[in-house]
Image (cartoon, rainbow, N blue to C red; front, side, top):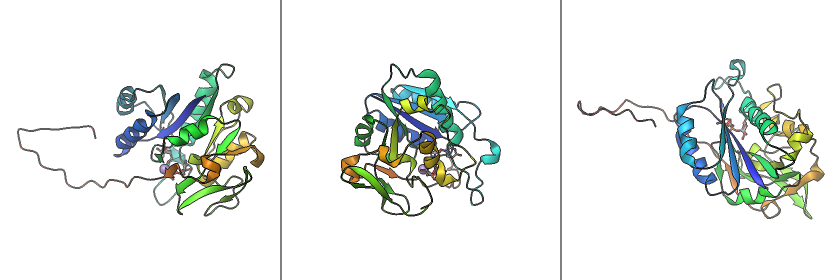
Length: 247
Ligand code: UGA
Ligand code: MN
Protein backbone atom coordinates (compact mmCIF):
# COMPACT_ATOMS: atom_id res chain seq x y z
CA UNK A 1 0.00 0.00 0.00
CA UNK A 2 1.04 3.55 -0.74
CA UNK A 3 1.09 6.32 1.87
CA UNK A 4 -0.50 9.63 0.89
CA UNK A 5 1.16 12.13 3.21
CA UNK A 6 -0.75 15.42 3.31
CA UNK A 7 1.22 18.45 4.49
CA UNK A 8 -0.17 22.00 4.73
CA UNK A 9 2.58 24.61 4.67
CA UNK A 10 2.84 28.40 4.81
CA UNK A 11 5.54 30.96 4.38
CA UNK A 12 7.65 31.97 7.36
CA UNK A 13 11.44 32.27 7.70
CA UNK A 14 11.74 28.70 8.94
CA UNK A 15 9.62 27.15 6.16
CA UNK A 16 12.48 25.96 3.97
CA UNK A 17 14.29 24.37 6.91
CA UNK A 18 11.11 22.59 8.03
CA UNK A 19 10.33 21.32 4.53
CA UNK A 20 13.92 20.20 4.01
CA UNK A 21 13.74 18.15 7.18
CA UNK A 22 10.43 16.49 6.35
CA UNK A 23 11.60 15.83 2.79
CA UNK A 24 14.72 14.09 4.08
CA UNK A 25 12.55 11.92 6.31
CA UNK A 26 10.18 11.04 3.48
CA UNK A 27 13.09 10.05 1.26
CA UNK A 28 13.72 7.18 3.63
CA UNK A 29 10.19 5.85 3.17
CA UNK A 30 9.27 3.73 0.15
CA UNK A 31 5.92 4.10 -1.63
CA UNK A 32 5.17 7.46 -0.13
CA UNK A 33 3.37 10.11 -2.17
CA UNK A 34 3.70 13.62 -0.78
CA UNK A 35 0.79 16.02 -1.21
CA UNK A 36 2.21 19.38 -0.21
CA UNK A 37 -0.37 22.16 -0.07
CA UNK A 38 0.74 25.76 0.20
CA UNK A 39 -1.36 28.23 2.12
CA UNK A 40 -0.98 30.82 -0.61
CA UNK A 41 -2.70 32.42 -3.55
CA UNK A 42 -0.06 31.07 -5.93
CA UNK A 43 2.46 28.29 -5.78
CA UNK A 44 5.87 29.63 -4.80
CA UNK A 45 9.22 28.92 -6.41
CA UNK A 46 10.68 28.13 -2.98
CA UNK A 47 8.36 25.15 -2.61
CA UNK A 48 8.53 24.21 -6.28
CA UNK A 49 12.34 24.00 -6.15
CA UNK A 50 12.30 22.15 -2.87
CA UNK A 51 9.98 19.49 -4.27
CA UNK A 52 12.05 19.16 -7.42
CA UNK A 53 15.16 18.46 -5.34
CA UNK A 54 13.42 16.13 -2.96
CA UNK A 55 13.24 13.26 -5.45
CA UNK A 56 10.08 11.64 -4.18
CA UNK A 57 6.71 11.49 -5.98
CA UNK A 58 4.54 14.47 -5.11
CA UNK A 59 1.63 16.73 -5.95
CA UNK A 60 2.20 20.44 -5.45
CA UNK A 61 -1.07 22.21 -4.59
CA UNK A 62 -2.12 25.50 -3.07
CA UNK A 63 -5.19 26.70 -1.20
CA UNK A 64 -5.27 30.07 0.51
CA UNK A 65 -6.77 30.22 4.00
CA UNK A 66 -9.69 32.66 3.71
CA UNK A 67 -8.48 35.96 5.24
CA UNK A 68 -11.30 35.98 7.80
CA UNK A 69 -10.02 32.65 9.17
CA UNK A 70 -6.35 33.62 9.31
CA UNK A 71 -5.12 33.76 12.91
CA UNK A 72 -4.12 37.02 14.49
CA UNK A 73 -1.44 35.97 17.01
CA UNK A 74 -2.73 36.10 20.58
CA UNK A 75 -6.20 37.09 19.42
CA UNK A 76 -7.90 34.36 17.39
CA UNK A 77 -7.78 30.59 17.43
CA UNK A 78 -9.05 29.43 14.09
CA UNK A 79 -8.08 25.92 13.09
CA UNK A 80 -5.01 25.77 10.83
CA UNK A 81 -4.56 23.66 7.75
CA UNK A 82 -8.30 23.31 7.02
CA UNK A 83 -8.45 24.62 3.44
CA UNK A 84 -5.14 22.94 2.58
CA UNK A 85 -6.07 19.47 3.87
CA UNK A 86 -9.45 19.68 2.13
CA UNK A 87 -7.72 20.58 -1.12
CA UNK A 88 -5.56 17.47 -0.74
CA UNK A 89 -8.54 15.21 0.03
CA UNK A 90 -10.30 16.49 -3.08
CA UNK A 91 -7.14 15.94 -5.11
CA UNK A 92 -7.07 12.30 -4.02
CA UNK A 93 -10.77 11.85 -4.85
CA UNK A 94 -10.16 13.30 -8.31
CA UNK A 95 -6.81 11.75 -9.20
CA UNK A 96 -6.67 8.39 -7.47
CA UNK A 97 -8.55 5.38 -8.79
CA UNK A 98 -9.88 3.54 -5.73
CA UNK A 99 -10.28 0.30 -7.68
CA UNK A 100 -6.58 0.21 -8.50
CA UNK A 101 -5.11 1.74 -5.38
CA UNK A 102 -4.34 0.34 -1.96
CA UNK A 103 -3.21 3.02 0.39
CA UNK A 104 -3.51 5.09 3.53
CA UNK A 105 -3.87 8.79 4.20
CA UNK A 106 -1.78 10.55 6.85
CA UNK A 107 -1.81 14.22 7.88
CA UNK A 108 1.88 15.03 8.31
CA UNK A 109 2.32 18.63 9.47
CA UNK A 110 5.52 20.27 8.32
CA UNK A 111 6.90 20.93 11.81
CA UNK A 112 6.56 17.56 13.58
CA UNK A 113 9.36 15.01 14.12
CA UNK A 114 8.84 11.59 12.55
CA UNK A 115 10.58 8.26 13.16
CA UNK A 116 10.46 6.47 9.81
CA UNK A 117 9.13 3.36 11.55
CA UNK A 118 5.75 5.07 12.01
CA UNK A 119 5.19 4.88 8.25
CA UNK A 120 5.57 1.11 8.21
CA UNK A 121 3.19 0.92 11.15
CA UNK A 122 0.48 2.91 9.36
CA UNK A 123 0.99 1.33 5.94
CA UNK A 124 -1.22 -1.68 6.74
CA UNK A 125 -4.44 -0.07 7.93
CA UNK A 126 -7.84 -1.66 7.34
CA UNK A 127 -9.90 1.27 8.57
CA UNK A 128 -8.10 3.62 10.98
CA UNK A 129 -4.79 3.13 12.78
CA UNK A 130 -3.89 5.03 15.95
CA UNK A 131 -0.72 5.42 18.02
CA UNK A 132 0.84 7.67 20.68
CA UNK A 133 2.26 11.13 19.98
CA UNK A 134 5.04 12.65 22.06
CA UNK A 135 4.84 15.96 23.95
CA UNK A 136 1.62 18.00 23.34
CA UNK A 137 1.72 19.97 26.58
CA UNK A 138 2.45 16.74 28.42
CA UNK A 139 4.97 13.95 27.89
CA UNK A 140 2.69 12.25 25.43
CA UNK A 141 -0.88 11.46 24.44
CA UNK A 142 -1.95 7.91 23.69
CA UNK A 143 -4.80 5.54 23.06
CA UNK A 144 -5.36 3.12 25.95
CA UNK A 145 -5.25 -0.44 24.67
CA UNK A 146 -6.70 -3.51 26.37
CA UNK A 147 -6.42 -6.94 24.76
CA UNK A 148 -5.64 -5.44 21.39
CA UNK A 149 -8.53 -2.94 21.31
CA UNK A 150 -8.62 0.81 21.95
CA UNK A 151 -10.74 1.38 25.06
CA UNK A 152 -9.91 5.00 25.94
CA UNK A 153 -7.39 7.81 25.81
CA UNK A 154 -4.61 9.42 27.76
CA UNK A 155 -4.79 13.15 27.05
CA UNK A 156 -4.31 16.44 28.80
CA UNK A 157 -7.39 18.51 27.90
CA UNK A 158 -10.51 18.57 25.78
CA UNK A 159 -12.46 15.66 27.30
CA UNK A 160 -15.53 16.66 25.28
CA UNK A 161 -13.83 15.60 22.07
CA UNK A 162 -15.18 12.36 20.55
CA UNK A 163 -11.58 11.50 19.53
CA UNK A 164 -9.20 13.35 21.87
CA UNK A 165 -6.17 12.83 19.64
CA UNK A 166 -3.74 14.87 17.56
CA UNK A 167 -3.61 15.02 13.78
CA UNK A 168 -0.26 13.17 13.85
CA UNK A 169 -1.64 10.15 15.70
CA UNK A 170 -3.81 8.42 13.12
CA UNK A 171 -4.05 7.30 9.51
CA UNK A 172 -6.94 5.84 7.55
CA UNK A 173 -7.51 3.65 4.54
CA UNK A 174 -7.81 5.75 1.38
CA UNK A 175 -10.97 3.85 0.41
CA UNK A 176 -12.85 5.70 3.16
CA UNK A 177 -12.54 8.93 1.17
CA UNK A 178 -14.53 7.41 -1.65
CA UNK A 179 -17.13 5.85 0.65
CA UNK A 180 -17.62 9.25 2.34
CA UNK A 181 -17.36 11.84 -0.40
CA UNK A 182 -18.42 14.71 1.88
CA UNK A 183 -15.92 14.06 4.66
CA UNK A 184 -13.88 17.24 5.18
CA UNK A 185 -12.45 19.65 7.73
CA UNK A 186 -14.25 22.89 8.49
CA UNK A 187 -13.71 26.29 10.04
CA UNK A 188 -16.93 26.30 12.02
CA UNK A 189 -15.65 23.65 14.43
CA UNK A 190 -13.10 24.56 17.08
CA UNK A 191 -9.37 24.11 16.54
CA UNK A 192 -9.18 21.02 18.76
CA UNK A 193 -12.17 19.38 17.09
CA UNK A 194 -10.63 18.96 13.64
CA UNK A 195 -9.42 15.39 14.23
CA UNK A 196 -12.87 14.38 15.49
CA UNK A 197 -14.58 16.16 12.58
CA UNK A 198 -12.73 14.17 9.94
CA UNK A 199 -12.98 10.86 11.79
CA UNK A 200 -16.73 11.32 12.34
CA UNK A 201 -17.09 12.38 8.71
CA UNK A 202 -15.50 9.07 7.76
CA UNK A 203 -18.01 7.33 10.05
CA UNK A 204 -15.30 5.92 12.31
CA UNK A 205 -16.16 4.36 15.67
CA UNK A 206 -13.93 3.24 18.54
CA UNK A 207 -14.23 -0.41 17.52
CA UNK A 208 -12.71 0.40 14.11
CA UNK A 209 -9.45 1.63 15.63
CA UNK A 210 -6.34 -0.46 15.08
CA UNK A 211 -3.65 0.18 17.70
CA UNK A 212 -0.12 0.42 16.25
CA UNK A 213 3.37 1.02 17.65
CA UNK A 214 3.45 -2.18 19.67
CA UNK A 215 -0.05 -1.78 21.13
CA UNK A 216 0.55 1.95 21.62
CA UNK A 217 3.57 1.49 23.87
CA UNK A 218 6.09 3.29 21.61
CA UNK A 219 6.37 6.93 20.63
CA UNK A 220 7.38 7.26 16.97
CA UNK A 221 6.16 10.79 16.26
CA UNK A 222 6.45 14.03 18.21
CA UNK A 223 4.40 17.19 18.04
CA UNK A 224 7.31 19.60 17.84
CA UNK A 225 7.44 23.29 17.00
CA UNK A 226 10.28 25.39 15.70
CA UNK A 227 10.95 28.60 17.56
CA UNK A 228 10.22 31.71 15.53
CA UNK A 229 13.29 33.52 14.33
CA UNK A 230 13.48 37.13 15.43
CA UNK A 231 15.67 39.00 13.01
CA UNK A 232 18.38 41.21 14.41
CA UNK A 233 20.31 43.84 12.54
CA UNK A 234 21.43 42.79 9.09
CA UNK A 235 25.15 41.98 9.08
CA UNK A 236 27.30 44.40 7.13
CA UNK A 237 29.01 42.83 4.14
CA UNK A 238 32.22 44.20 2.66
CA UNK A 239 31.35 46.81 0.04
CA UNK A 240 32.44 44.62 -2.88
CA UNK A 241 30.63 41.54 -1.57
CA UNK A 242 26.92 41.24 -2.10
CA UNK A 243 24.82 38.25 -1.05
CA UNK A 244 21.14 37.65 -1.33
CA UNK A 245 20.58 34.02 -0.43
CA UNK A 246 17.22 32.40 -0.19
CA UNK A 247 17.18 31.13 3.39
C1 UGA B 1 -2.16 21.52 16.09
C2 UGA B 1 -2.39 20.18 15.38
O1 UGA B 1 -1.25 19.34 15.55
C3 UGA B 1 -2.59 20.50 13.88
O2 UGA B 1 -2.65 19.30 13.15
C4 UGA B 1 -3.83 21.34 13.73
O3 UGA B 1 -4.02 21.69 12.37
C5 UGA B 1 -3.65 22.62 14.51
O4 UGA B 1 -3.31 22.36 15.88
C6 UGA B 1 -4.91 23.46 14.42
O5 UGA B 1 -5.99 22.90 14.28
O6 UGA B 1 -4.84 24.67 14.45
P1 UGA B 1 -0.12 23.28 15.72
O7 UGA B 1 1.30 22.87 15.91
O8 UGA B 1 -0.74 24.13 16.76
O9 UGA B 1 -0.99 21.99 15.47
O10 UGA B 1 -0.33 23.98 14.28
P2 UGA B 1 0.72 24.32 13.14
O11 UGA B 1 1.80 23.30 13.07
O12 UGA B 1 1.12 25.75 13.27
O13 UGA B 1 -0.19 24.19 11.82
C7 UGA B 1 -0.64 22.93 11.35
C8 UGA B 1 -0.27 22.80 9.87
O14 UGA B 1 -0.92 23.84 9.13
C9 UGA B 1 1.23 22.93 9.59
O15 UGA B 1 1.62 21.98 8.61
C10 UGA B 1 1.39 24.35 9.10
O16 UGA B 1 2.45 24.53 8.18
C11 UGA B 1 0.04 24.62 8.43
N1 UGA B 1 -0.39 26.05 8.49
C12 UGA B 1 -0.32 26.74 9.67
C13 UGA B 1 -0.85 26.67 7.35
O17 UGA B 1 -0.91 26.05 6.27
N2 UGA B 1 -1.23 27.99 7.41
C14 UGA B 1 -1.16 28.72 8.58
O18 UGA B 1 -1.52 29.93 8.57
C15 UGA B 1 -0.69 28.06 9.72
MN1 MN C 1 2.62 22.06 14.49
